[in-house]
Structures are given as structure tokens and as C-alpha cells.
Length: 122
Length: 122
Image (cartoon, rainbow over all chains, first blue to last red; front, side):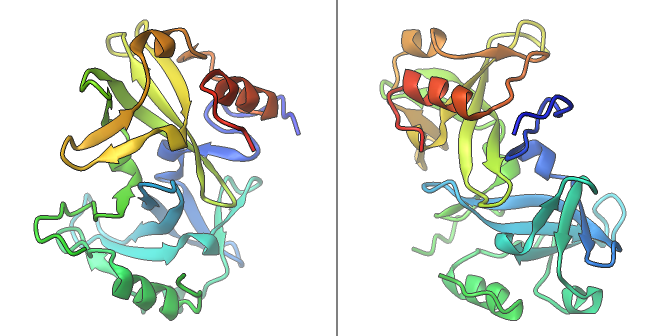
């Protein structure tokens, strides 16, 4: 398990929160879909619930944020990024918000987002 | 559960990863112990394993990082920060590293850190 070339803020199993932010997201074909803007964590359990992808926009203008169920993302050590098994069109049509219209991430929003991607919201 | 004054990147239950970073950490007496620098997340499960506290130092010079078992931190909405039931002396004597000496966060390190604070490392 020990990797002598391990990055200072990364191990095989763990990754630093501030390294997740900005990490590229690819689909199975290797197309770059965007990057992780941040992720939403349950304060008590410490469990990540959404990865919020950003794409489009320029310095925040016109930028759109797409929350995804965290478990859809798989970290690919070769690519140094996350891979989602997701069609770009499906992602584009998915739940999204602009910077000033952040959702409340309540239960009904969770069901909406998870439901869109066919992932059970527990 | 709905809070009409909810911050845009925070709900009652969830918090944005980039908001955890920089959040103040207090002890039970209300003394400010430091702040969260970042946290280490399991890439697969999305579960936060360590909160890495920073304190001391000035623009990174002499700064020390103290990893804590994530579950030791309780978010206090009134304070807008985390509370740990921890004596400052105990924290100061705990496992720590400087910016250029980041640990590998392997199993034995986990046992060392969790063990120091009396938390089972599973």
C-alpha cells in the first residue's frame, strides 16, 4: 500500500479536501466534463453527499454548478481526476444552479438530484 | 428544519468543503484553539477521516498542523465553528507536522493519531 511517490497531500486512500476542489472530472471516454468546485459534507457524519461540479463561465460569470451524488465519482489515479459514467448531455440537462442561487440541499432537493441520476437518496 | 437565514453555502445538515477550511475550532470553554486547515477524505467512501487543524505560524512560517479524528469535532451553529472537548495542552502535545513534512496517513499513523486522542481507529 505504501507509495514512495505519493503526493504530499494525498495518499492512496485519502485525499485532502482542498485537493478535491479543482480536480478534473472526466467521463468514461476520457472527455473532460469540468472540475469539482467543492463538495457538500454532512457536518455530523463527515460523509460527502454531493460533489459540486462547475463548468462553463469565466471568472464566475455564467458559471453553472451541477451537484452530483458523491458516490458517482470514482477517483482515477492514472488520470489524477475523477471519472463519472455519465453522458455530457445528461449532465447538461441535470439539476444545476448559478452562483447566486445556491440550493438549500434539503431532502426534496436530494431526492431530485439523486433521482435524476438514478441513485437512491437514503 | 428549514432555516430562512441559512447561509448560501451551508444548510443545517450540510456544509461546503471550502467552508470547513478556515472554520474556527474552540474548546468547551470557548477558547479558540485554531482553525481547520483542511480535512482528509476517503476517496471511495467520501468519509472525512481527519480534520487537520492549523495553528501558530505566520504565512506558513512555523505553522504546525495537527490532525484530529474527524468525529471529535462538533459543529456549533451558534459559534459558527467547531468545538472539541480537548485541553489545549493535550492538543499541543499531540501528533503534528510542519508544512513540508506531511505524513502518509497510513494505517499506523491513523492508529497513532486516533490512539493519542483515545478514539478507536477502525
